[in-house]
Length: 565
Image (cartoon, rainbow, N blue to C red; front, side, top):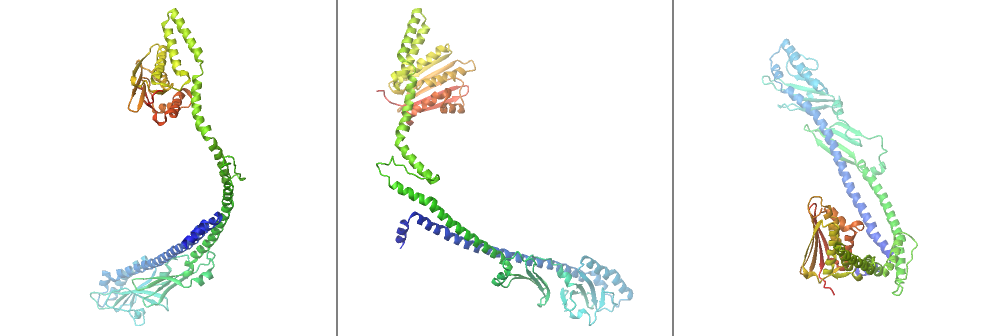
């Protein structure tokens, strides 16, 4: 089965392959990626919403818990007050005792609490002592007062009672006196609207916040439904798809249960928008994929098929003559043009480029050598030499002989190669000419191993380095040193080495690089020598510079051992 599909795919036309590949590699992954992304993003979106709901519940819980804790702390402060305990331990208190109890103990204590806790409407001490009632501060326990609904035990625990008919909240605790068997109860009268009204709105979304006591009785209920529903898309559809609420609850230390509920429709609103936008983007992406497939077939596949058909018509006889045609000037047209250009270039590459380059270098050298008519020049130098001898001027005679030797060896009958001995004689003749022109201002020293004389060397290879040593080295000595030019030659197992050294001004690395790379100007000769050596010797020949500012320069020329014919 796999082999059949492989054979089927291999034999499809290119445009059908492109369509199939785009479908498999583009459309299906796009669908899978969209579905996977929606699932992941929906998961994290819902997780974020749930975390937000838990934070909202925690906010309401903490607000209410903080308020109740402040009430309980205030009540505990009164219940455990030693001064109040002593005052309530009196037996058969007189009117004066009661007055002192009210004015100097109870009223200041209760007022200090209500001053710090404005939510507390009244603080009342209910007692079984035989005392007179004192406003809302002290009351004698009666059968029909609020204490009839309280649950008493032998502990000073804090208890809550909600008087639903009168919409009042009571917080109470017994006060036990060490020296009295009377019953005392301190009661905080709290307005539930004030208590629960202090819970600030905890969300801008639709939600329900409810509080129940430990017996399941409703104490507080708040429902928020924003008036502006323009930011919610398809509210009825969401309500039908996601009915019910997402519920969270926490229990306070007094047994009250705080419950936060949020409609599931509001939580899934963001995911519905996400699904809608993702579907639109998917459709747009699919449309772009199909447009891309069509464009690729139209602009790339079809021209390539045409190119393939035209190339198939070329045979070996007209390979270099046939020119492919393409009207457009895009990359495919450039491919046609470059292919035609390549055919022409291959046809003339060896003769017009490689061989032409070699011949050009040879012709340049020969043209340089042929600039002077050898016979006329030799005859002129011979005449100068004879005249100098006749008048007894030895210096002019030596100069003419040196020039004759130099140009005879440098022209070398138009040949490009000569023996090492001849090249050294040519170079030494040039150096001696310069020595006379410089009025013997420097010393010429030669250290030549005669074993290298019989080997072959390119014509005019050493002389440019001697010229540089004189004009750019010795001539630039700024102290009182006498110039020194050393010409050294020796051989190793496989190579010949020629060294040209001077004690001149020296060079830095940038100057050396300029000399080796300059293709024009005063250093062109060195660059030309490198090119000639590359043509004749390849990698077997090299030139190395070693120089220090103020000390001098040494050039080492390495050549392969080639015997002269």
